[in-house]
Image (cartoon, one colour):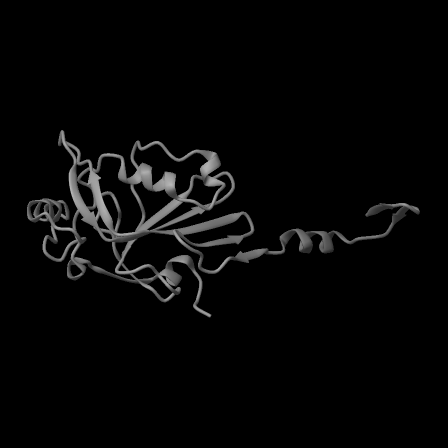
Length: 203
């Protein structure tokens, strides 16, 4: 190994094992919980995870086969995006009854089609977010892509206690009743916490 200083160059021996150990060291970065929308940003080596919460709000959802969107109140939603060098980002989406204040926050199955029981998202042909957005801590573009694209008939079961076979039926019930909020009692417990999904424990 050679080091250049004002006094000149200095050479000193370094074993290949020392170099390998230094390069293999795992760097971990954890911001903790942030506000207002970004919950946390975690970094470990080349892997970066961003978790964000979307407040409960009325949302226009496009369903395949329909000319007009259905306007329904959605519960609070949490999106987790994990990126690794040279790989497509991995996502999971969950419902919450309130904005998570700790990693122990309980998660529920998101009442959305195209979201698996594991929380993973089936993007289909949806255009992915830009590289610039992937480098940031905001998931605004990710939310826009997910909720602004037509939902199909994949993974529609097990998301609603009232309509276990198809959560889309709940949308029409809510729209007909002009409901302002998504009923908490209809959410299906995912038996996971925010920490378990992120792979971290509460302090």
